[in-house]
Length: 114
Image (tube, rainbow, N blue to C red; front, side, top):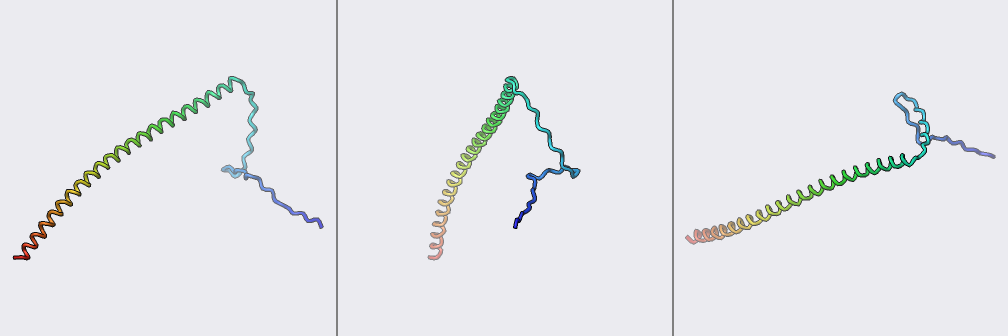
């Protein structure tokens, strides 16, 4: 017995459908252009100009990033100074509270004796 299986062939990728519901006609192939030295030089110059513009954008972005890092460094230094001052004031307050506590205990003992 000769059993043949059938298969459905699906185009890959499926054709795009335009807004009218029809599949657009395929584009014709690009015409062959003879490469001349002038054309090659012009294309190279255009590519180099694009590369230079991209590098200039990168330099500007890196400069901005470095400026932001400098600002962050300054903010952190200010925060460190504020924390030192806060720690100092808390130490002074702790000393005053300890002194007041000793005085209150002495006063309590004096009052208990009376």
